[in-house]
Image 1 (tube, rainbow, N blue to C red):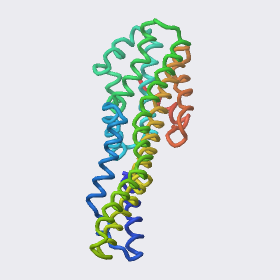
Image 2 (spheres, helix red, strand yellow):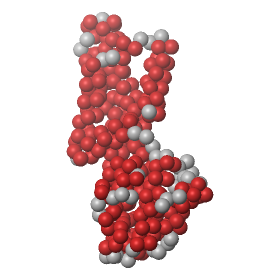
Image 3 (spheres, one colour):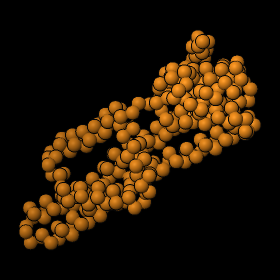
Image 4 (cartoon, one colour):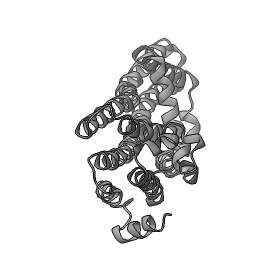
Amino acid sequence: MLIIVGLVVVFLSVLGGFMMAGGHPGVLLHASEFVVIFGMAGGVLVVATPMPVIKEVIAKIKGCLSGKGDSKESYVEMFKLAYEIFLVGRRNGLIALEEHVMNPSGSAIFSKYPGLVANHARLEFFVNGMRPIIDGKIKPDQLESLLQAELKAKEEEASHPVHALQLVADSLPAIGIVAAVLGIINTMSAIADGPEAVGAKVAAALTGTMLGVFAAYGVVSPLAGRISSVNASELAFLRSISTAIAGFAKGMAPITAIEVARRTVSHDCQPAADELEELLKAIK
């Protein structure tokens, strides 16, 4: 929601300032300039970006417009799930975790935490992190390296839509110049029509330059920055999961592993130590 408010402020500020100076919004509406600028920008994106990344760009933009960021509650839910899983593994042996980790959709434990279960990427990361512990195929210190490698791969993958949008943002000012030059060429052919016709065509050409710069720095580049921020938040959440699982694998008590993970959370989402401990101890 906040991103929509920001975009509205950007548009209203530009149009409001233009109108306060005596301009009329209608003179900015030149269909030919929109076709050139946004058509070229779309073409640049298609030429430079594989189709899976284009789909991811669209999905990320939709997520920014409609999604909510992480909160303390989402971290608490994850910590409670991890603690309960760790507790079962500590009390009943790691083999007791198999029915939960191998089939989370049918698990009585996972069903208590619908928020995390609904997020496929987070659930998959948690489950994939726990499976080597149950299988016993790798040593505890190797598991941490495995999780870090997966996080690095996810970070690289998440950066692709940001780079694609940033490429478009970097191209838009030059695309605006192309639209302006085309407008000037069109103006030169209309000199005989008189000053009024020439002025209208020059205004249309300058609108192209304005649109290119405005779209780059007022819309596309901020969107790329917002997606980058969302990616960082998601990676921070996964890193907390990784820290908790790695701590449990190394032999930490469940509540200690959760406490170590809690300390990796940013201050705005971090539950207080005493509050979290009370919530965890209340789990039966």
